[in-house]
Structures are given as C-alpha cells and as structure tokens.
Length: 433
Image (cartoon, rainbow, N blue to C red; front, side):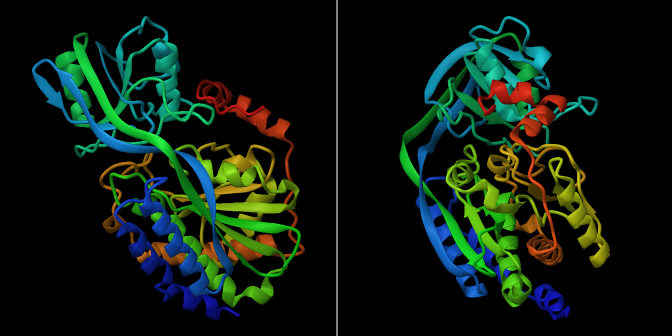
C-alpha cells in the first residue's frame, strides 16, 4: 500500500510544527523557550499518533548572553560572544592565523588575540571544528579567540566552546563576520586589541522528549533530532527542520504501525548545541545492545537530496541503498565518521547510527549558526519528500529480517585515527577511549 506516501506529501503536520518552533522567541539550551519548544514537540508527537509522549529533565550548565565587543584602535568592531565563553576582558596583539590549521598554531601566541576563519581550504583532508581551533589557541597561550565566518553577508557565527568536563571555556571567545574579520586583519594585524564578553553563568535544566511507536519489543530503532537552537536566530534549518521531520515521520509511522516488527523510540534531544548534552545523558543510561540503529536528523530539509552518513556501518549503507532503489530517489551514504551531532554518543560505542542531513553543496553550515538561519530558506516540499524516504528507511530498519551489526568501540577508535580525527578530539576533550 502506498496511500501513506500521498498522505505524507500533502501533510502539513511537520511544517506547522516547524513554524511553531521558529516562532518561539528563543530555543537556547536551558531557557524557558527551549522548554516550551520541547513541550510543543511532545504535544505534536501525541497529536500525530505516537504514544506516551513525555519530557525528561536533563541538568546542564546554563549560559546567558550579555554584551561583547572588540575594541581596535579608535573603533569598536561588531561581534557576538560564543556560547559558554567565560566573562572577561583581555587585551593582546591581534594575530590572524587564516584557516587555523594545526600547523598554524606552532608559533608564539602567548597573550595574543588569535583569529581564525570558520572554514578549511579545499585541499585540506578534514574538517576542523570550531572547538578544535579554540582549544589549540588555548593550548598555545592565547588570551582571547576570534572566530571569523567564511560566508559573506555580515553574519557573525555562533557556536559553543567548553568541554564535557569543563563546560565553560578558558578564554573569552567571540564570532565576527567575514567582513569584520577581513577589516581586523587589514587594519589591526599585529596591533593591540581588546576583547570583552559579558555572560550570566549558572545552573540550568534542559529536557529530552520521548515517545514510542510500534510493538513493545526489547530492541528499538531510535529516531532522533534536537529541538534547541542558538539564541541569535530562528534555528529553522538547525535544527527546527530536523525536529519537524521527526514529527512527520512519526505521523507516517503511526499509519504504518502494523508493519513495524521492532519498537520505534522517538527522542528529541535538548542542549545539542552546547556539547550534545541531551544525547550524552540518554546514551549513558540506555542499553546499547538493545538499539538496532539510530536515525539522527540534523540538517534535513535544507535541500532536495538526502545524505545519510553511515559511519562505517555497512548494513546501514545497504539498508539506505535498498530504500533508494525502492523509492527511485538518491540517498548518498558516505562511510566516514562525523562526531558532531546527537548520533555520536551512541556511535562512539559501536551502536549503528546515521547522521541524516541534506546535500547543500556548500562547505560548512552555510546559514547555520548565524542570524540568517530563518524559515524563508526552507521549502515544505523538501521536508515532505525526505520524511517519505526516512519513514521507509525506519520501517526497513525495524523489519525482523533486517540485520544491522554493531561494531566494537576499538574499531571506531581505529577509524577515527585513520581519518585523522583522533588528534582533534583529544584537543577538545572529546576522546573517550
């Protein structure tokens, strides 16, 4: 029966929920807005037919944005604080490290204000996360960190610093637009500049949303996303669309529930943007052997074609290929590891997990983590098409004749070493082995 496809393609449930999320004043982790978005997601899951939708409280490190500034010469340059930056003001020589590759930090940076770009050159063999650049600056003795966007449009980027062990970072950190970064490098390279950050730091709580579909089996397929977003924008693509897709998938699965041989456990995490806190909290408390697979939606709906990073799990690639063939729609399945979304606390320990996103054809987050992450960038047709594919993928994974082998943590660690990701994870305190 294919009636569910037409029903999903004409559904407005996911898009309506996306509008609810982007119209929430803030979804920053630990805020009342994040809680209201989680409550709305719980209610939306109930409305589309998932059962026992509920909230689970998660303790987190709270951080609330105050003012920030870069004073250079007789100018004050526009910037925004990076979440979990400590409060403080510091002055030092501005040193522009360009892309901020590891070798760029092999110089005397003691007391400096270090600036790096948010991207890496096309010839470089791996992505360098913001936190790796930040902690390399910390290790080199820098006094402050400036993160310059590589995307044009006067858009300063946000994104957290801090580690799981020490949630508040070591030195003040701010984001600047590509244009401000170029101006700073041109006019003030080698001169003394001051960076100041004001933030309110306190204890807080986030929440994970849970719901179930299908039979009450010991094993389960996790369908996940995160509901929180940075406080400077609507968080439409990152990750309102991912949560909207989960609602739409749950709606379609409720209509196909008799086809599910394995329980589907929907989890919409809080506090992803400040260190995967919600998913780490869940992964530490869940029986990994009982998880068939994780289908983590973070960045879906931004473009038409679907990407399911498979993290070296061949059975996940095979399942996606079967669905792509059956639905006559491409699904790209890169095998590399990606340790920066809510699948990762499970994949770390060998649990099969997809990182599901859209193929935008651009480097980095694009509009994500900027003021420009707004609803007008998205199209409901992309969301509906991808919800159809992902519903079919979840049914495929939940079938009793589908086998998805787990991997050993040692094999994940070996792959991280082989893909040159291990060193960066050690730098940012994310190496768990």
